[in-house]
Image: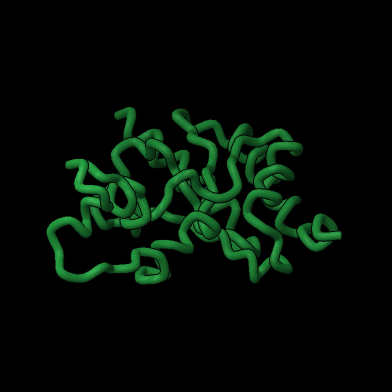
Length: 155
């Protein structure tokens, strides 16, 4: 029941946001059987090219100034760039462990450009635990206002 209400609220958020430039939903297709497991740490996809190149972090600042909750950009980094895979010397061999047992050195950065760009192409979105359309619309309006006025934030 809880997940169903969260799903209803989150779908309402994205449906009400509609085709606002710069944003698109990160959610399962309706009827897919997936309900995002309660939508913990929900994200939206951010398209800076649709809003004059406004960086995700600036977008997030402006949305927060309008009274909603978001962080521009993702705090998630591509896992293949994590230091434990690239620089940490786990066994004390004097070199990164990924090189200790291999005959070649693989440069991590730049190998997975889509994963690496995610940090700048995702934003957190409010997590609505209850289906309260009036409250959700207030958050939608904060996102809409910033997206539609993004060019003013660039100057």
